Image (tube, rainbow, N blue to C red; front, side, top):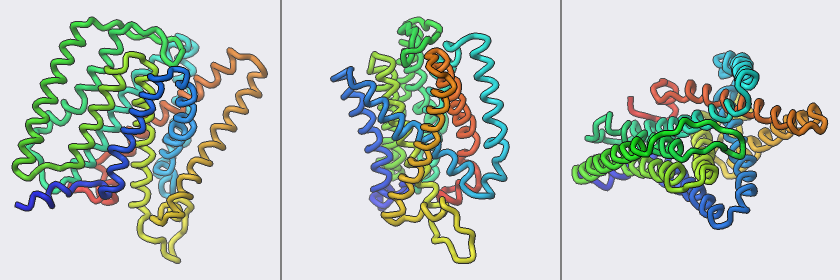
Length: 353
């Protein structure tokens, strides 16, 4: 068997792009965390760069999938126009009944699940891209991907944190023995996962891209939720990784979806024009989406400052309620529009059925 050919198969796009998605993004996240650990005073500057260049941008990137074309807007009209109002109502209700801590707590746990679920979903794309089917049982794949994040969130819950991002937080205190048992599950699942990966390697069934991606997932969640003791710094590592990963994945999807040059008889949309693989278009794509992000969030910020009129408590409340509404809406939408089993996704990404 020509194992070289087999091992090289399974890239979402190719070695260059996938290396950035897998290794480059993880490196940026880990280096950023290292910088903040070395100099805690740099937490705010690094956080600010993350929020403006990646965090806001990754939320806006969702709308290139949700509302990029007229057909998209028609198909997703409920998600675009009505769901935000429902989510806003829920967030306001939480604030009115329980207070800010409840919104922060929901965010803490939901963002952890969202980060895990996104990485798991991209891993499914990689699995379907593999040339040959792995010998690894499906249940082990799920266990290997989820066990470290679950261990991580249990570990955070055992530390007794009462603040997250300098806001009130409530986490039920988890006994250390539960965290220890979770760590045993992690060790067992990782060892078994490595066993099957070595077995695949020996039989020529190993998909290097999927293996690399899953390994990077494990490293980031271990570092972000276990190895780094400080909750905010650990979250920052995971957040940078998640945001950059999503932006790159959505860009790839758009370039594959609109990859064929738009014909003269077809309606030319801004997104389709920007999503062509030419150096200047790639630059313009990211500049355009970043510009949309900046305009939207800057307008929102200035509106809040005008409404609050110097009232710091009101201003803080407006920021938390509105930004978490945007985040929660993003979480719901992403859970619905990126299913790997959708026929359109399989066709666009050229996946095996």
